[in-house]
Image (cartoon, rainbow, N blue to C red; front, side):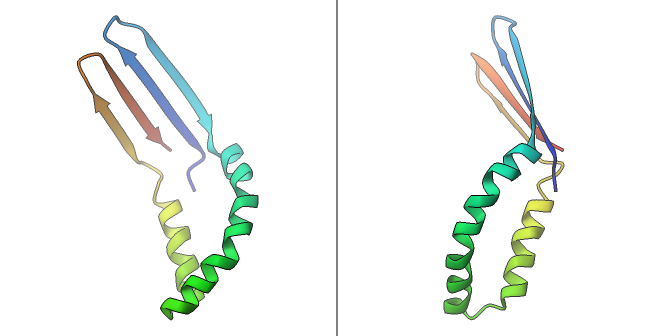
Length: 85
């Protein structure tokens, strides 16, 4: 699972702003929310007749695949760069 996100904002005037976000802290904050959502997730899987092990494996697979994601957005006024490692 990715453990670091780097956010860079560059304005047209030449000012840069970089922010390094440790994702471990975000994962720990979201863990209680995940425990609250988990029963609803399993009910949804039962309604759709999906094996719960496959459903959980799919969610974990998506989270693990986030590493290496790069997002770049540019406009004439500024640009935003996000990299998840």
